[in-house]
Amino acid sequence: MSTEYLNTNLIFKDRRDAGKQLAEKLLSYNLTNSVIIALPRGGVSVAKPIADILHGELDIMVSKKIGAPGNPELAIGAVTSRGDYVLATYLNHELGDRKWEYIQEQIGYLVNDCKEREKNYRMNRETYAYDGQNIILVDDGTATGMTALAAIKSIKKQNPSTITLAIPVISHEAYEEIKKQVDRIETLKIPRDFTAVGIHYEDFTPVGDEEIKELLSG
Image (tube, rainbow, N blue to C red; front, side, top):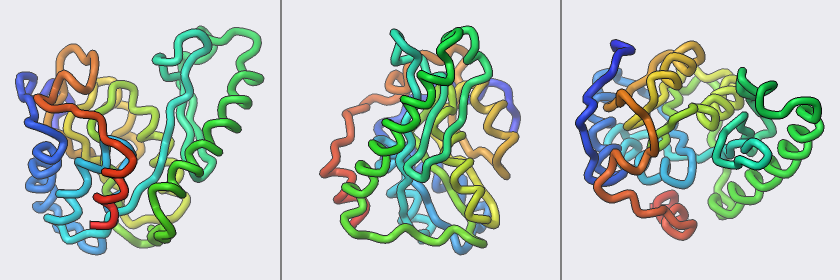
């Protein structure tokens, strides 16, 4: 797929609509033995119709961004429930001398938080084995790609056959970075100016914990 801007005026009805559109595109790859891994919260609502249409197993992996000190919305990295992390290349400019002290504190705290959240969502459901499987990682959109990159790092350690990132909307910069780490990226929109994920949806209602549990058990 071209890495230039794509469908810049496209607006999704909601996350489920975006998931259905992605699923139709993913069908052409004939990804048998697929495990669809959703990044909560919003990624679960996108992933559910993909799992249904592709007849794949639906799983989750919690990944959280590491925010810059004093500016938590600026992602300088991300961690996963499996203990893996990635850091931004522009890190030195944001943290200065106390970089590693701050990062170590954040990694320890956020990994534990991710583990607790994932345990709560799973409700005793075991994680699927990824060895030899076709993995489809799903989120509802990304500007930096940090949480997806951390999840990809965790997934790779389990020797999957292929990794596909399926995401409705992604920034050009994140696309260029993530494509180096996966077999393919399937997306519906690469906007010219990426601000917030929610502006690309008519309905971007927050996804609650109970809804996530229902989607995983349905």
